[in-house]
Image (cartoon, rainbow, N blue to C red; front, side, top):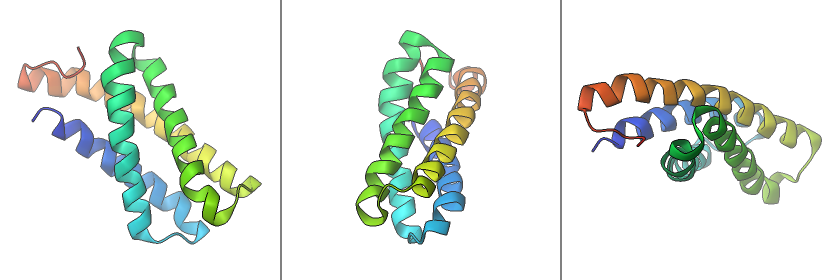
Length: 122
């Protein structure tokens, strides 16, 4: 149960960022929500549960940004092609996600771990 809050926070932030940037490329809202859910789960498992305890906040935030960048390119590449605008949009989303991830990790460490007394990132 302690994993629900960070996943929900990630999903909300990812869906807002991805929706605002990638809706301009003509994607449906439902496909962007599916992409947000998949990226939230993958970055939580790989970045937050595996990399964060080993390397720390900055490295995990950058890695989550890279995962989001590659995930968006894999998601939108076959339908739109890899043009400068799609790569630029994916890079912008990845940068904003990496910055937000640093704050998510800080929040989870300070707030959620103290409330539940069960370390999430240990």
